[in-house]
Image 1 (cartoon, rainbow, N blue to C red):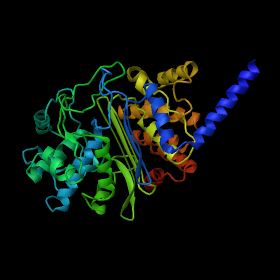
Image 2 (image 1 turned 180 degrees about the vertical axis):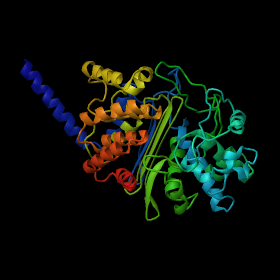
Image 3 (image 1 turned 90 degrees about the vertical axis):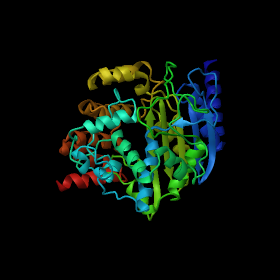
Image 4 (image 1 turned 90 degrees about the horizontal axis):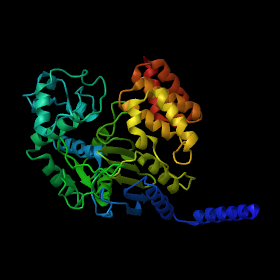
Length: 461
């Protein structure tokens, strides 16, 4: 009987495999995403374009924590830091109109700010190299509060242009400069000068809880976030408008190719700039990727222009797995094997991660691996890498190094994990170990342009 069951099971698996090979890319994507949604790993809206045409567009899950209202493609989502693209592009539009220069100092527009405003250029704001500290999120409740903090700030964290610190005071001042130069509010500028020309008819700036067709963010315990933001200027989008925005960038409908390069080129490797990250060749955008997180919203935009691929993922129930979903979708589009997404340790154990050391986190990881191997992505390097970068963003560099180092032992043939370890050592200031790991990364992945750039930089010193 057991042999008969085994034979039937084998036949079923072969049949399923054969059916899968015959399915279209859109059907495979749909099947994967619905399975992911059933597991509670994705609630949100998705758009996929291949060869320049939209092949898949869907809404999966619920619009709020009540789980009574289903999402539709007409719902808008906050897109987190991707909304910073609007102020970056607006700055460049004003520059191309001759109304400002990227070398202008902040003091030119706001002489009432302290002396540090004479040191910071608009370019520093775009590249997050201003030296400004972050917004005081615990106490700031309005733009006025943040202005008061900036006016009271006596010194910068570092000399502008010498280092990098990704934070929202850079964004805040960009938006205020746009208002000063244009003579209208940032909200009006986005609506009239950007959304309207691109025919983005459903975008909304700074929606509150009363906004119609606005997805509400909530956590895994079904606690819903209030739509209250301490500082203004955040654009929420539908799938359709998000796609129009990316097409507008790729086709240079608002700013020129040369100007686009200025906000696509970061201060250094593994850093962000106005458009997130990407590269251009021959005056054309080749790749563009940007992620954003706000409350329990997360979004990820990926564009590869040569094959005409655009992937947009937006969720109102953060699971920290959008890059995993993106990788699966790209594998399907490329006709490559893929693994179904699994639960994120970071999403499910974040409070514990905040209180455990690097070695204790590895104990938790191995305990989960022994007891729940089928639920989490232990076969994938991204599980630990995600935790490592979380720690890195929390300035826990030594704990991040512990995690990344262990990942190189689990996945010794992956250039990516050595790249991550190199980045952590670079952040710590341990240049010899950073160089060693970046070189190993490049050996394993000769296409790693970031590693090449960092190695060249480190070997000059």
